[in-house]
Length: 218
Image 1 (cartoon, rainbow, N blue to C red):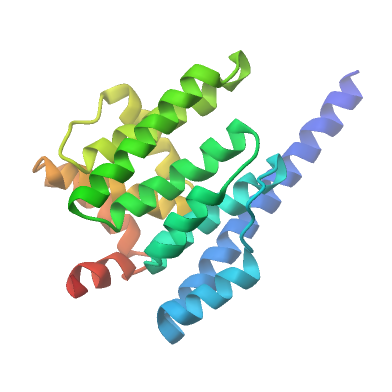
Image 2: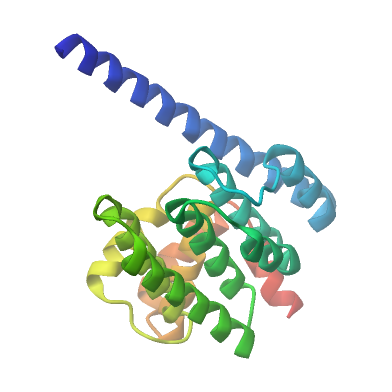
C-alpha cells in the first residue's frame, strides 16, 4: 500500500509539473504573437495551442480556463462572450472554465455590459452552491471568490476570506493568474486602495502591457 501511495504521489507531481509547463508555454506563445502581430496573430496562435470546445470534459478544464484568460488578455470580447454561452458539460467543468471567462469579460467591459457579466458570474456561483455536490467544496469556494472579485470591479469591497482565496488563485503562473491579478488590482483601485492595487498591477506589467494598451485605446 505504501509503495502504491508513493507511486501515486510521484505521478501526481509529474502531472502537476506538466500542467505548469503547458500553462507557461501557452502564455509565452500568446504574448509573443501579440507583440509580433497584435490581436489577429495572438488569436491564431491561441487557436493552434488551445482549440475551443463546446462540450467540456474534466480533462478540458485547465486548457479551456487558459483559453478564456487568453481571449480576455488579447481583448477578443466577442469570442469570449460567444464561447462562454456555448459551453456544456459537467457543472464543475463549466464553473471552473466560465468563471474565468466571465471575469475576463467583465475586465474588458464597461457600464451595463460589465454589470450584466458580473451578474452572470454571481449566478454561476449561486448555481454551483445549489447544484454542486459535497465533494465540490473547493470549486464552490473558488467560484464565490472570483464572483466577489467581479463585484469588486463595481466598487464593492472584497470580504477578507474571499480575497485570501482569490489572491492565492492570482499567483498561478499562467494567463489565468494574470487576469485574476489584473481584476484584483482594478477592484482595489475602484475603492481607492491603490496601496493594495499596485502590487497586482506590477505583477501583470512584468509579463505584459496588454491591459495598459486597452486603457490607452479606450
